[in-house]
Length: 200
Image (cartoon, rainbow, N blue to C red):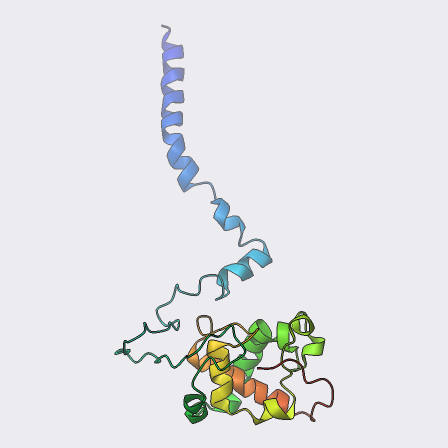
């Protein structure tokens, strides 16, 4: 075999055997391309994609247990898919809002529009919502809704009821209070004289 051909084959062999390292270590990963597209980048960082990737994400405690690490105990009762209380209203009524309302409004605004406005509308009126009218979502602007205590609204966010799903596995406790505080700002507007919406 001519020396030149042997040298060429040896060089090609080195390139081929080293090509794997070049492919994996030098070429960009296809996963990196998702960061180029803003929509994918947004989806990667939003909390609803992987809600359990952080240790501080709320989890319901197993029945019959008591959280010993400061977690929130479970007071849910009943079937949240039925039009009945899905939590003990006495407990809900005793829940005190521990937050500084003014300091949480910006956060509450963001979370309300992320989780709530699709059914309850951007300003609390389900008639202006995307799916609210189809589901019979409750208007947050009626006298009945304005009379709900903060603890009741907090519990409703955590457990849901009727057509409203539970958000306790998606929204942290302080964030639930931020939503409650933001709803109160919506309710500070003039009373709703239109339809009352569904029932919670």
